[in-house]
Amino acid sequence: MRKSSSFAALIFIVIFGIGLGLAFAVYSATTSTESVLIGIVAFVIALFVSLSIKVADQWEKVVILRLGKFRALKGPGLFFIIPVIDQIAYWIDTRVITSSFKAEKTLTKDTVPVDVEAVLFWKVLDPQKAALDVADYQSAINWASQTALRDIIGKTMLSDMLEGRDKISSELQKVIDVRTEPWGINVISVEVKDVLIPSALEDAMSMQAQAERERQARVILGDSERQVAEKFEEAARTYTNNPVALHLRAMNMLYEGLKQNSTIVIVPSSAVDTMQLGGVAGLTALTMGIGQENANREKESGSGKQE
Image 1 (cartoon, rainbow, N blue to C red):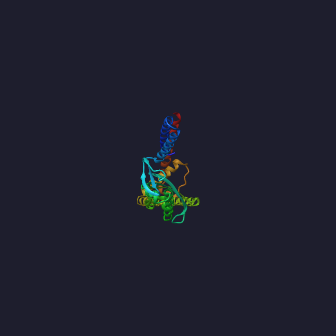
Image 2 (image 1 turned 60 degrees about the vertical axis):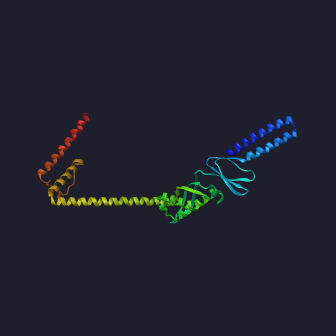
Image 3 (image 1 turned 90 degrees about the vertical axis):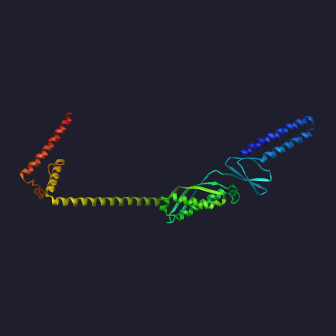
């Protein structure tokens, strides 16, 4: 129930009650006919006044028609009309209103069917135009939004739609605002909520993304191997010009292998000759070094167990 209806009912009760009180007072002093007449007049006055009084909320505008023609805009607050002659055509809400709309199975520019959902934020700026220039302006806004959304989808590639929702929202706002401006309605913003694509296409896009990642991984691996090869080439040039460095590197590699693995290591005879391990001095030095290393490791492990 509207506030105006409650207020009008209260006014009716007050006026009619006063009239009944006067009729009762007259009835005790005069004839019953006069008291009944006073009661009828009080009822008519109370009904007329209650039908004339209207109250609009702070966010409402009321469109008044007099004998079918536009008379005035009333509200917010208390206002009066002439019963029977004046007619309230619309109670228009001037606050920001949200409307959801969507386009189902609409083809994009690259012929992909999509379902798009969006939200429209709009406001009535000119209640007179909204009431008189279009029938049922709320339905008209919904239809205008849907057709605009379908037009935008048909002109947009799927990849652009998935990546550039802000751009689509901005274009939608401009298109819808142009269509609704003659109706006295301002589109504040449009937000695209969701873009749904067929499940088969989702699987294909997922496989494409996975293949792209694998391609990038292979490219990175190939670039790493190229860099390692360049470093090996640079090291080879260094060892070619410095045989002593090559000899020390070979000795270190053999030493590390014997220390970490077993005492049996297969070494090419050419490497043995190069490192001079065939001589007694070379073998003695290598054996003493390994033995000293093993002794140190056993000593450390034994001290650890005692603790």
